[in-house]
Length: 389
Image (cartoon, rainbow, N blue to C red; front, top):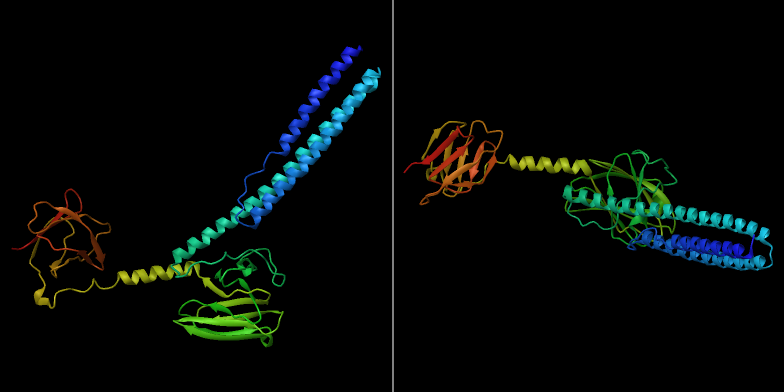
């Protein structure tokens, strides 16, 4: 092999080697993802990315120097006419470079996978917070949510794999916040944190009454209760510096299994939301309101009520129409299953207009008086109500 060919091989290998090193550097500087530094998880992700980039950069610089030094050494060997050894060394360097690049890529892929997992956990926690906040709004609880929803941190004492029975809601993630809100379940436990010299206030559902409180270690804990505006409060504080026990609390509606832990921080206030139970109660109260009698009549007595209306047409006709001077009431034996449009023409008006109305019991209540009204059930079924002059 001529000296010219040897030098050409060295130069080509130098180009290939430098290109590969540049590729390795570009891989090292590729960011895994842009993390939001709003909380501790985001800060940790950001820190891990920086460490990964620094380590990879240092490794790439070191590898680059080693490869370039070896190329200089090989050029000297070429000049010394030791071509066979130079070619063997070239092959070995190519294989070593390839292995180092593969190792760098594999390491970065593992780090990226870990960072993506942490990012997904952060998103899941944020989604859980939104669900709890939306549930609280739907339940109509008059409170502002402070802190975070219950975590899935399991206790050493009851243990379990996260089933409905063994799952323990833990208030540890409520540090720094005033209120911890648990989601009530009769089969679950609730862990709270108390501090010596401070009171933790447990507020129960409005209207329920505490009938029994029992504890595993009552000598180390001070317990008292009070009632404020129909809401039972249980006030708990530790007497000793450290200690853990459980309380069983029974009311006329629910039972609560609470684990209390004496710590260097505490939950000032604890309360519960009641899921489907509260939704059903809200629906029941709304149904009761809808069953209230049609409302107060503004006329002082029946002699002032206006019953002078004529009813004609085809369809489901009202059996009675009367007015109290402000509203007009249409009574039916049987209400329509679907809402129908009602058009009215007021006194001294030439055109009819669509009006809103409410339905209570067997009454349609129109929030105004009129000279003529039409209930249009269909194109052929039109009921006309006319006030007599």
